[in-house]
Image 1 (cartoon, rainbow, N blue to C red):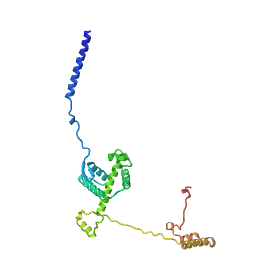
Image 2: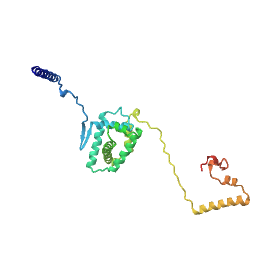
Image 3: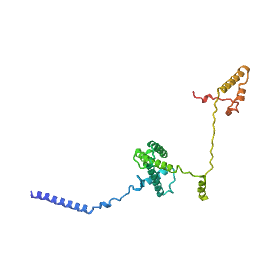
Image 4: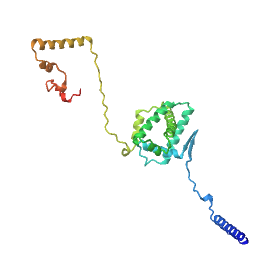
Length: 258
């Protein structure tokens, strides 16, 4: 009996020592949780214009948008894009102040056109397009494009309003052009503009009747007077495409589908 009790107590003592050792080891191997993660900046505010906010991610998205439009961006800096975004937001802000409106229907039509253009560039793969713009669904992509396009259209209309009364004279254009160094002036190829005036005459009833009478006379000459039908066609035919063949039509019945 004594042996059994001693054995049980011995096991308990050994077990307690093991727990203590494990606890001490765990305490010695604790890591500082403040150093476990390196902070990563997800996004940030680059600028504010009125009620409009320009995020750092907006600059990256603008680069993607320009590249999708075929614009070469290697010589364009982030500062330039940021400045353009601020300018657009400023125009949009003043457009709202001046009660300039853009209907949702106009914006949706513009978004739909852009989506279709982007899809053509990725062979119609919507998933690939969502991956490029880092969006989880087509709906979220369209929502963001709706907001972007509305701001852009407000900006454009405000710009148009600002310059609607500005008049530029030919002399001002010449002065501006002459200030550009000759080696920096853009070159333009020869451009031709071709116009065609098409007039469709109205045929009077008298003229129609004259032609009918003439055709009846041709028919009578062939049937009653023995005139050559081919000679009539050559003399009076007006189809230049088969004039060389004497206005003879060749019909290959094997090529016909009934």
